[in-house]
Length: 107
Ligand SMILES: [Zn+2]
Image (cartoon, rainbow, N blue to C red; front, side, top):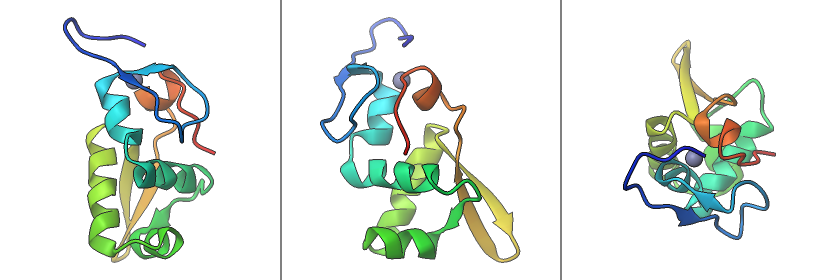
């Protein structure tokens, strides 16, 4: 894990079973919320990606909530969005810093 000077670290949440004990702010932003981490795992098990309505059904959350979480994950580059017709498909960016450097498991 690489930190910019003065950056503080965060303890890995209990729902993330392995990986670095101390997370950088970016990774903590990605997994610090349990539902957001569930989203990562759902996308991690779906190599072809999922759309918002599929994610909403699986997580039993409201669509605005799921969209909010997806936007946070896009901010830290953990998730990518592609357009397929009129739909947005979300896929996990497996080469993102969170998964490569901080070793956050996604399945
Ligand atoms: Zn990190």
